[in-house]
Image 1 (tube, rainbow, N blue to C red):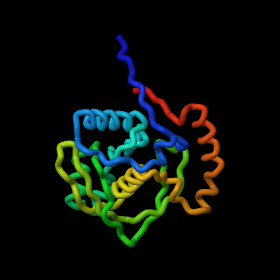
Image 2: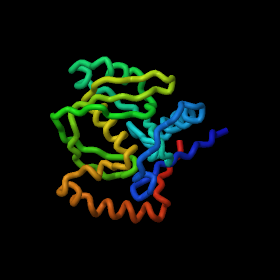
Image 3: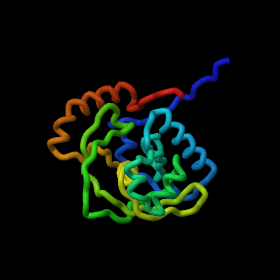
Image 4: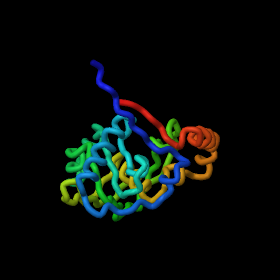
Length: 198
């Protein structure tokens, strides 16, 4: 017998939930744990490295990440926080917050599960200080850089109703304007949802 594949959905640009400021998670209940686990499965089904609850259709301050550790990052040496995070991947982070940002910035191409097939360069701080609660109630806090810092900034932006496209330079925004227009038109016909099964 073939096992039925589960349907997973991600909300796309144009859905109102992506523009809201998400509410804090009051307590890590069994329902929150179950949702976090399903978000991880959803992220994996769409081949993502991060997913925020608003993308999943729920306006709560919860993200999941599964950032790969590159040989280059490993060679630089990891902070205690980075090592703990990479060891925990994939990991759910409750009420995450960026508590500090470096003055130094870097530019890197970004994409988003809610803005499919569109990539553009985004300037962000190279390093951040970060704090969040894990599902077991413990708190993780520290500094990080590289792709991990970028992913955490990208996903926490979602909790404040910000898409990576909102952070583009005018020139970069103009370059993807046509793609965004087509995405919104397509989304309006699909209730701003992408669906996959896994």
